[in-house]
Length: 286
Image 1 (cartoon, one colour):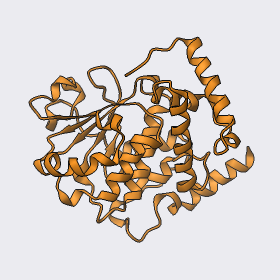
Image 2: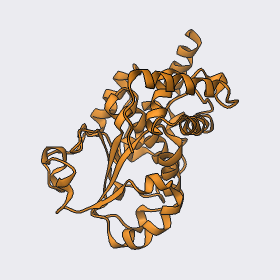
Image 3: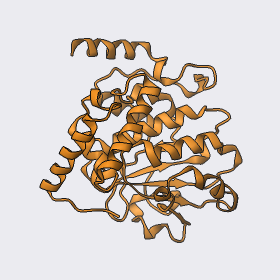
Image 4: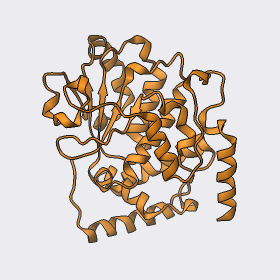
């Protein structure tokens, strides 16, 4: 359930959360900005204790992944994976005007691409959606998964568990709905039972199943891909990636997916030494 807080009530909540954070051994030294505290409050229905818990999990995830609890994913960390188009920010809205994250699970093969890549990219795309967009920050996002053509080769317990842990506990975002479009019977009858225990009860209640016949109840035609009954085209992911490099003030170097060895290569976090060197210099200058 969403709550409506006045500006004064929200400021009081932020102050209360700040006191709680400052008293928390895992968070006190991080000097977390008020904007992040606000995101955590909205993500957890303005309950201070729940907001504190998600901040602890969020900062721990970055500490474990990037070696720094204050660090955040950058485009250079996830460049190669985003080119697959498995995760897209198409600029759409659902029927309530909230931003959409598009997921194409039938493009993801865990046997070929280690799960860390999709989890890192998910964190990055959630950062993109929620950091500056006030609608997403306050009222949440909708995740649309086109399950057309999905099969066992697109599933692993490890990747499912890590993704659902992020969405349930480790990222300060309000999930309005997770729309599973055209989910096959092996998912609805077998996989759904397997993965439900991996997620919070609140997240499980956000899942809704739709088909071509019902999807327009949630989206206008101009907010859907043509193959889903709409009029939109797929995002050109290289254009998206180039735009993110510009917005983050980093130099762009093209990557060919054909040359990426997902199994043996170092992941995107360490693969671009020139970017990492530039970021280190910026840190030293601060």
